[in-house]
Length: 450
Image (tube, rainbow, N blue to C red; front, side):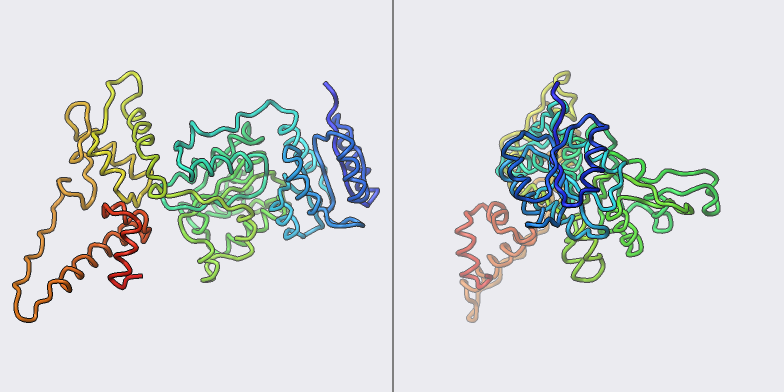
């Protein structure tokens, strides 16, 4: 098989020679360029497997070249060399589409890890990046998510996954990992809100024997456990301020210092993070560091709520029921048309996780092989077995009674409840009320609620 070929772009001969020799020892040939003009010429003449470029070049910025390669040759992984401490430039490069970055002075172990990852993308076994069987749904929102994951899987850039509780943020993170070049390495999920603050540093970075009372042996931290793979920080908004500072340094330096250790340990970890909270709002309030938000939010991926993809509900229902009943080995269970209609109209504040819980309960309650509407026990749904509040008695008309005002008040209360139940998603509220979106807008205007 023909040896891989890399393009190295830097106007410092010593760095070019260092990278050239390192690649040579890895059985990779290289072409060297000192300017953007020369690099563009070589890109036209050769088919490269990897590109490594400095940021500051005599005739321009390496980020411009990163953007060009991303547009014209998206299959070519491009890494950037950044000045010491210049994390802002690295973030810019990652946003432009860079595969990864390596800071100066160039750490050879880090460089070899980067090159190995890039070779996995271009010369390794072809990865099936499709995720339709993992992230179910044919709605436009889910098609967009799956398309974005294909692009994210080819990068090592940090990704911030936002979305309500129960939408499947960890599943999205795991899919990004499984479809990328790190799939053979560990995927380490951690719930940041579940670790006591006094143990957090030791849990993340590890400790050496004797570092504190009870530390009777060396302990590996989460960063070391995820070395070569992916660290998924779930509920990252729960990190206390002191830990946010330490996490920021670990991301910037690609190194951690175990508690009680004298030296830092290099780690090659891709950071994926998630929270159901509005992280940008927390930054404004001063409870989450802006610089850390900037580092982990290189690329943001918003996971849609179940209300935003109601057409996927029947597919999800069938999938969950198959899993709960054991698939082909058990008698199939169906959902009646009325029950399915109720599910499609329900707001699902708990999203897919709530759907799973509702169906598991319904399987226990249903008689025979059909789940009926009453088996679902949906909150605030008539016939669900819960106590239904008695309707208020109609008022006695008198000389001061105005029917239109009374009916408007009743209508306004119902609309408000629908909006509150759907967290002011007007499309979902209209479906809940059994009217069109246009009709809801008309009612809001008529009732002075816009």
